[in-house]
Each structure stands twice: as C-alpha cells, then as structure tokens.
Length: 377
Image (tube, rainbow, N blue to C red):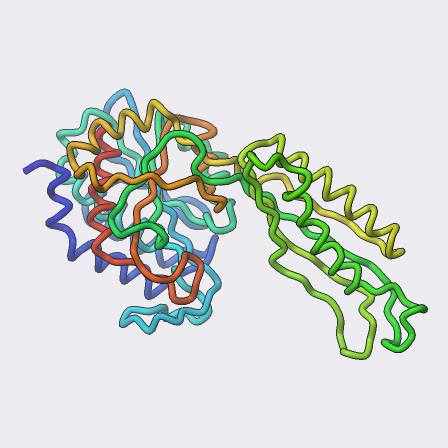
C-alpha cells in the first residue's frame, strides 16, 4: 500500500488524538500534558525524541544526508469555550480555538505511519512539536537551541475555518504578515469631572490617539501596500465622576515589508508626540520589534511539493487564498531555511480565536496526507 494512502486507515486514531488535545488545552509555554502525551506515543512506537525546555518535543526518524522538518504548533488560547462539544475543554478559560489541536494530531498520526515505513526513507525526518506559537516565541526559542541547524527544509500547515472544508492553499510568496506589538501610556492629571479646566484628561487624549493613529494606514501608507494597525485594548478611569489621569492603549501592527513597518513606527512616534503637546499630557510609545517577519513561501519548495501533491489530491482541492494579515511564527523558520506553509480549509461557521471555533474533523486525514507529502519531498 502507498504510504500516503495509509492516512485513510488512521482516521479514527487521528480524531481521537485531536479530541484528547482539545479536552486538555494548555497555554503557551505550559504545554506539559500535551508534551507528555506526545512523548508517550513516540516512545511506544519506538521513535527517538528530544524533550525541549520547558515544553515541546522533537522526534527523529530515518537516516540520510538530508533532513526534512515537519512542524506542528500545540498551544491553546486563553478563551472560554462555548461550543458544548462532547469533548470540549476541561480547562476553564482555556481553549484550542485556532486549530493547533488538529495540527498536533495530524503530525502525531503522520509520525506513526512514517515509523512503520522508516526503512523506506532515504532521508531524516524531524517531527517538531512546537510550543508557544500564540505568543510568537516558540519558533525563535527553538531556533536558538541550534537543533534545527541540521534541517535542510521545513514544512507546516494551518487549519482555517474561513476556507472551504478540505480545500488546500499552497502558494509561493507572501502568505502571512509580520507582527509588531505596541503599547502607549498616557499620563494626565486627574480631578473632579465638574472641573475639567484643572485637569489633563487621559481619556480624551486616548480617544484622540485611537482615531488619529488609524489615519496612518489610510493616509501615510501607499494604498497598494497591505498593512493593519489595530488597538485591541484601551484602559482608563476609575469612576464616572473622576477625570482619568492615566490611560493605556495596546495593539498590533501587521505588515509585509520592513519599509512599511518602519514608516508606521515613525508616524506613530510623530502622532503621539503631537498629542502630548496638544493635550499637555505625558505620552510614551513602546513599539516592539517584530516577533517574526512576514511569512514568505519559497517558490522552489512550493513547486517541489506540488509535483507530489497533485498525484495525491484532485486538482479541485487546490484553491487560491489571498495573503492573510494574521501572524504566524513559522515565518522565523522560513527566514533560516527553505520550505513552505499550507492552509487547509476546516469548514465551520466561526473564525479562529472565537469561543465557538471548531472545524470538520474530516479534514484531519487531509492534513495527514499533506504531512506525508511534505515528508516525501
């Protein structure tokens, strides 16, 4: 039997893996039970492995002069699950709302099949079960260990609910955005709500900044360039009759080029400085370096994978998906070595990072097949 065709026979097992991970989600850097579950299975199947610190595990299969790495992220989010699935999260306030449970299950199932055919492999396979993708720290930390220096190429995938079930997007070039985090702290002067002339209102200052910062994208960036500036958190005030003396804005910037990223930072500095002068407030901007670059798929790697993929999947399964402004720390790997990252449609009604997020488990076999395709090139 063809090794990739064997993915069909492992459907029940890959679903059980996914449900186990889904029931016991763990946030970034705390994937202790998840790591142990994977370790137990790798050991049971006779796959050598290396445990990472504090979490994460890398399995190794095969032998040869070249090495291909397959990566799955395994952390969950601090989100209260609302799905009422029979296997919903047992960890209150924590949920696999981004498909990482599926990614980990897919790689674990692929590992079992690859082990059964280890003597047929003409190269080494590294099974990278990576922690802390949601904090954009896991890939960078793993690269720092040097363990991936021996890998020649790396592949990964992501299940998205916004793509039709089972459809695959495997395309060269820009696929996901670079991510910068920022925080703005405003220092004003609090006082009685009835005496605003004696105060420096941090709320008014914050509101003005929240609006004016949006003009950076619409008026300072070339409309043909893609960029997003989002303020996701605003905090100010203690009571309805007290003018707030402090406020905090936190958000993210998403870009595909360093030039645009730098232009946004410069304009944010100019606008915050102008707001400080206008409102007589003290304002500090902390614009953090990108946690990862934009994710660009290597054209040669995509061509190499597609030669094999078109013999496994019908042509109708491949669709075009425009680049996303979402971040993905897999980009750090592609900054160091060749490889590519695929999107798989999960169906479902709710977007990733939503308390009702779920995907059709039929796509798990699709994911296993794609991992095996990656392993074969």
